[in-house]
Image 1 (cartoon, rainbow, N blue to C red):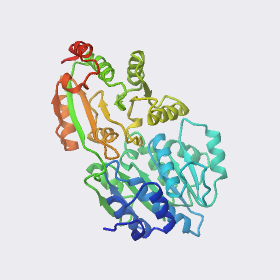
Image 2: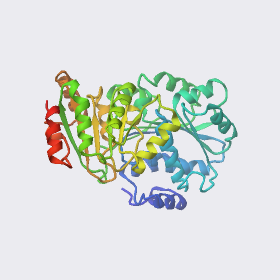
Image 3: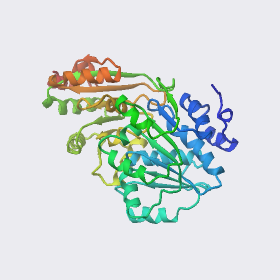
Image 4: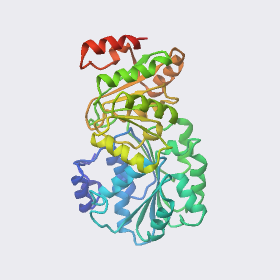
Length: 400
């Protein structure tokens, strides 16, 4: 394997930008994907969260776009607004912009997603010509395409990032409709952290003689994640969460819940206890969601209570704890959620709250995710209290 980005065929300028961004050497997925993409091959990638998948396509596609003589553009489809913004940030980094607008490049980046000003996005889209990169959620892009505001006939490069979710029931119809508007002569890249066997044939049908890349393990910079399960009655869960964060109010954490209502209710409970918590879900206005994530990243906010809208695309290296308020429906969801912790080489912890009725579901998660969760007590799950006498007295009420 190559030891540098230059050896993979990247231009010196792009190599320098990668170095400036802290990418000292290519990760395994970048070593495998970059030469194949530069050679014009279709690629199917399965690699864990945090392995550098976004840069693995952003770097070579930036180079191909800069060298292209034809007015063809890159289209990146992603499932969530947060992932649109994350991918845009990575492309800007790969093109030499450490901050938006800091340095002009010959490539225009166009983020398109719902929950934001449609007229502003339409204006930006109309102004974007020549070399450009569209990064979009399926619903908003299909809106523009259906109303003849966006023409996909000149798309030369298609990326389906989180391809498994783009073909889930939530997005499949919109994704397939968009594919019908694309030219058949294009380079297609499909990337995901998981790749269910039931979906693999669908993904392969999109590709022409693809290079298949599978990375089984995350790179060494990912820290170990302690994974455990705690059995509680449903009525005990709110009290346990409140007790947990009363003992560790500044532990940067994400609590994943199933519904928007649960996110609002649990966040309100924590805020009432004077804890720095906030909900994050699809019904919250985009500017509020953006400011919430910014506060979480900066350390002004320590606890996010989130639906799965945040399970993909949220990349905060110092998240210490992930708590699944309920057992996730799918092993893939479990893996994406716990992938929010243990980033940047730091240790992480993932705790799943279960009821006695969840035993079969928990077993399915263990089998599908190839993990064995340690069953612990409430006292074992709770952080060490800052005031042992008070915390010890409170902890009795949450024991199963």
